[in-house]
Length: 115
View 1: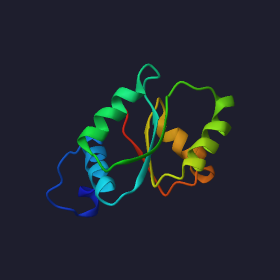
View 2: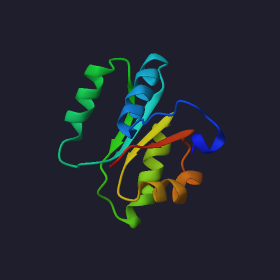
View 3: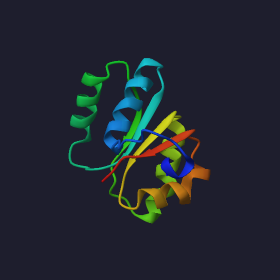
View 4: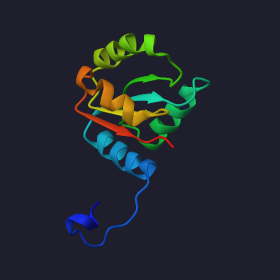
């Protein structure tokens, strides 16, 4: 896309690399983040790891990625109540989720990082 618009020196950056850079900046600027998706087995381990790497990262909330359409209204309410600055998503069809629910989410930024 960048090349199409005339940008030079375009290089690949993976979603996780971008997410790590954003988390580092969020940690430095005391932004609150919410994580939606991935395993329901042990999200605490992932959050502990993130807090070690980014000690000032403010975790507004976490919700696993195993939910049904009927769970979405309560989940959207949970995210909105947490009042995050950034929502990280790792879901099947995560771009569709953002497109379908972005207007209901009171979150300035969403980043899909799954794969």
